[in-house]
Image 1 (tube, rainbow, N blue to C red):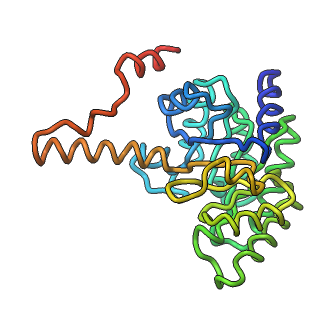
Image 2 (cartoon, rainbow, N blue to C red; image 1 turned 30 degrees about the vertical axis):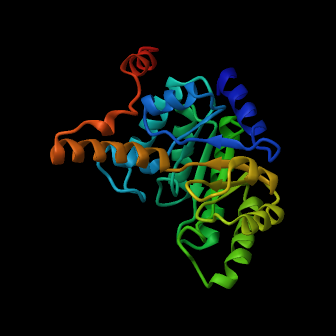
Length: 271
């Protein structure tokens, strides 16, 4: 771990506060990461979905470890702010595989990771989190370990049990070494407030149209707000609109809000 990476790890950890939630517009390549940084972001998060789509893969553990790490390395080298990486379930069949992923992600320059439970039992993610924590400690990196709980995103279990199930999973993951808990798929403020009150570490939620603003989320205790794959989806929507308009009517209006060529070129010329 370099002195620079140590500083970034400390800085990234300090950004998690409900008084001023960390807002993350997730990137999937160098250009998107530099655009996010140039907009004033304090950190850059990757989106595994965006990386997968850019390679012609579906989201959901279709990336190889090598592909994911390569994207993380390119992004971390391209920006000056801290980078946190979406590593899905850890890109390994067992704890040894997760340990290898964490080592490679740290070597790539990231100072945070997200690991998700999906439909697996909580004990499975707890074991992976403990492995990730031990691996980071061995590498000398103060890694911010964000545990993603997918109960709301996937609608797991009965509706009336979901809140308590989520809180129980969060407690298990914190005990295993998680520094933060990410609960995507929940957008109503009352539930989010209950989650923030019941989770003893910084709460991360995923935002998009219809979700309360960053300020409103911070007011109920949220410390981190992510856009997930939303920016990539918006970019691909523009591509589809532009292609559809061109082929259907011969028009070009879908390009009206595009970035200035010189601005994009300047960001790309930074080295």
